[in-house]
Amino acid sequence: MYQTTYHRASSVDEAASLFAKGNEAKFLAGGQTLLPVMKQRLASPSDVIDLGKIKELQGVELSGDVLTIKAGTTYFDIMQSGDVKKAIPAIAHLTSVLGDPAVRYRGTIGGSIANNDPAADFPAALLALGATVKTHKRSIAAENFFQGLFTTALEDGEIITAVSFPVPEKAGYEKMRHPASRFALTGVFVAKTKSGEIRVAATGASQSGVMRVPAIEAALKANWSPSAIDGVSISASNLLADIHGTAEYRANLIKVMAQRAVKAAG
Amino acid sequence: MSTVKLTVNGKAVAVDVEDRTLLVQLLRDNLNLTGTHVGCDTSQCGACVVHVDGKTVKSCTMLAGQADGANVTTIEGIAKGDELHPMQAAFRDNHGLQCGYCTPGMIMSAIDIVHRHGGNLDETTVRQELEGNICRCTGYHNIVKSVLDAAGRMKVSQAAE
Image (cartoon, rainbow over all chains, first blue to last red; front, side, top):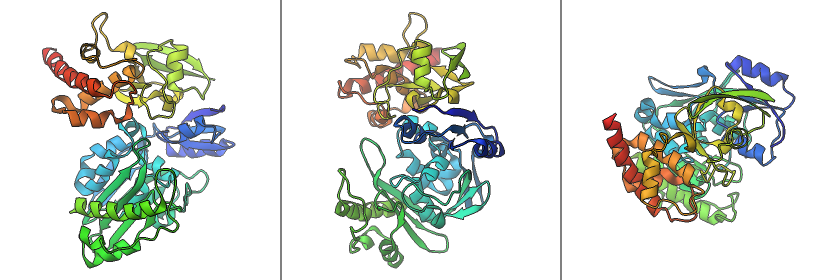
């Protein structure tokens, strides 16, 4: 790891002003991605601004039909939250298959979406549920937030403070886990909103990061059941291909994971 | 350089380290607590697992500065004098190790597993929960046996306290 200067912020305002003073500063949430990347010398921030101890970034709130998860809430705390289990159990399930116990104690929802790894789990949940990302400056719809591999709508120095999820009628998430990294080889989040809209998002599959899957949405709109997806054909063009799986394999995984997710959603 | 103040195995320490120092480096290089191992250095293998404020953490993936003010427990801090922690005793009795490299991390993770699940532990849960700890010798069979054995012992010792 190259030299850096560590700062611990005690409020969002302090974090923003520390960032502005840095030359090439980076925010540190749980550090489960940023620190490995810094150790590989793929990132060399002049300053690291730790958001981990900011109280206003911690916690889960359920208010009517909106579940709000503050950005610094760890995967473990999300998984254990009674409000999450009650309002959107698919999110509790998602966190339980993310990383491993030690990673879940440190990693945060804000860190995951700010990084926008093409195989991360949370981007699929945000996109399928039509969530809103709150920053210390504005609100951004999930549709507009994710902009391709490791790219988001965040401006330099903008801090995610929370994610708000409209509580759906039903939702499910299933993924094929890479056995070593535990990232999604492909993961699919399906949701039926309270107004009856069907939204399906896939992660780990596309060369452009998390994506909606309109063909499966149409099939599920006609008939909300795993078998409705049998006849859907998913094109392999623009899907990821690597040593772990071909584009055709991932195209098939999108269908299979969507079917399992619908089954889990009930 | 910064001064990091933390409690390690019950003892308050203050250490001057570069800001890029990882918690595992502070423990091993500055405090000579070499029981915590560095295996993969990519947060996958779990050889470096310690407890930070009661939670398991891969200490190769945490800056020393992030642990400022924290209460850290390493493998050196779990026995009571000459009396092994029930998890250590169970690993010894069940031959839950061969080369021993992964063992400190296995034991620290396993203690957390028992604390979270209490008496509801079964083999499937243990295997699932140990997914962040990699052993390349044993095939896990005796490790799982050790954790299940220790879960019983820890229940008994808790009840006695």
